Length: 382
Image (tube, rainbow, N blue to C red):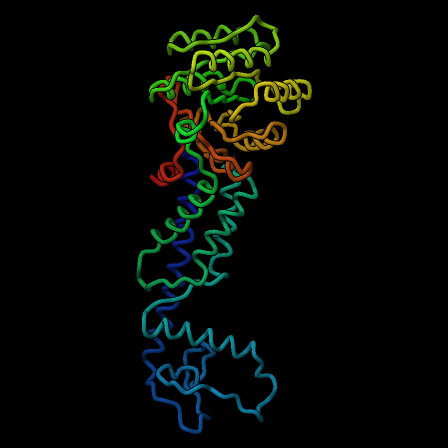
């Protein structure tokens, strides 16, 4: 799982670590040269310079222990501008870190190349552009200006920054469906939407098994009256799991089926109604209008979008389009166990602003895992 993403992120981590290590070697060489130069406080007149191996830092700047504030000569050339003073202050800070603490400070220019490579690697892993930019910017923010000990292994430092960036993106929208169901008014009605062939009906069966296992009574609504065999498929799942299925004839009005399922649940004091709908492309105007009617008639508490993790950016685009038509409350990604890139799982929650609820991890009814950003990031770096 996520093998291609792991490979690319590992390449970035090594590349940036190598670049940081190269800077550390260069800085250490400068320090060694500096240490060889006898240091003495500047003359009282302040006219003598103290060489610092071509760092551009003058003697007055190098007088770290002095509390005396440097007052610019009012008769000096006007080229001693504020920006120059700020630059000298920055050089003093770097020199202090170098000489006294054996540390160096990471700068923007140190990261430009590796961060560009990171963004390309993320895009090649089917991570949406805006998400790749957010991750890259987060890594930049954490590393630029940070101090690094000379000689310290930097691989862990870079990996930590990358882990934090991925976690921040993926945990921006979180939602515990079990908590919601526990506290919501019953019956809780959940409608499942998505395109054809992404595992929507199977995901409904897995969700029914999940809720039944934790003590809820579940009713299934066979609202996919369009696809041949869809009603029978859901009935087979219902029989295996041991839950009631409400169905009409093939070709019937899906809104009527879903309405009857909700009324049945109310009459029998069932806890949850899970409604199947016909798979449809977001570009099919007629079917999207039918979906809107289903949601109008039955007023679902939640609408869950289902797609394949392996679909990558296509899944992200479809999620965004469905969210515009019938605002979704979350997503389920199927076939996550077969996903080599991980782009859809990282991108969907960020793009739609709605959480990922479950990940499909196999063919069995128990192969539905509650989404956990920390667990997901761990899988990438294991």
